[in-house]
Length: 253
Image (tube, rainbow, N blue to C red; front, side, top):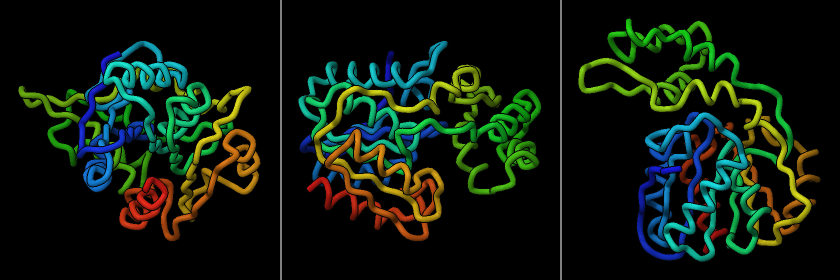
């Protein structure tokens, strides 16, 4: 699977894995900052951004993509930042290939099975009639009845691409992401542990991680530290970028 990526800076390798329906572009500013001390690889995961599309979308496939990426770029030990879906990929990768991971940063996601939480988002996206829209604003108006939150609509619209002929298309592989959604929310499975340093970042206003999840983190990642970022939700890196950077930078360095 071809993965689109951007490189920032020089130093020990640091991979950044975005969340569901996100892309590496969401991390440009932070990747530039981390690039002052690390060689950062911001990656579009399969079926997202400018990376290749496939008929399947599972954690196991995304883990294999990361493994191939590391081998292709002849990297040794890497540190990984993973947000949401990317955090699950990062956790599973660290458990499957602990010798390849230096430090692990998990952003607002736990190893557990999650309930479906994007059905309204899919309804909003499917409601956009690509052959009829005349502008991004027009697309947003179609989405609004299903997703009232302005910030979420703006996040989703980053996936809307305007072609040279003026028509619109989704960058992400919408059909596969919808068909394999249940694969993304599955629990992390491992008979082993990752004994490397692990930082778990939770947004104080987010419900993705609760106190019960600490038991799972302690079981799978014995050397974990959980840090709560105040006044931030699930997109903690976007809502509190400076504090997020300082927290991760101190952990990495």
